[in-house]
Length: 195
Image (cartoon, rainbow, N blue to C red; front, side, top):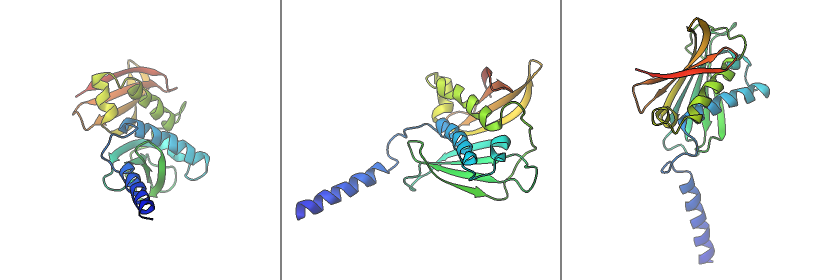
């Protein structure tokens, strides 16, 4: 009986240890941002949230959550001004392996003007821009934006005379910013690290 109780107690302790934040996460913070864009797409497909989140995605912020196991990352998604109603934000919780655990819509979001993406949705452009970070994470400079990403912002601009989407990644590991430029169809153009 004592052996059985000890075995049960050991199992409980091991499972609690698995949920601690003492180790390294299975996904980086940039990957958590990219997974949030995927999750938005899935929630829209399941009719759990309005499709405007895909088209009007503006900013995604990520933070590591302490002492709320199994939650490891909390990702906040903001949208630009919707056609009707007020802008909303959404929090998505992920575990340390990037598995989505929950989402919550938040009223009274702060937002900028609608960008009016035409060829690709803001969600698709976000994913494409973040692929640059994930695929180049071994580069020491880009790696700072993979492991310690804090936010991703999508804007429209002009580069060498052509309209582009600019994804900007900030990192807690540097004061610099990573700009990723895409054609409006989502094709990668270039990237630069700026002060």
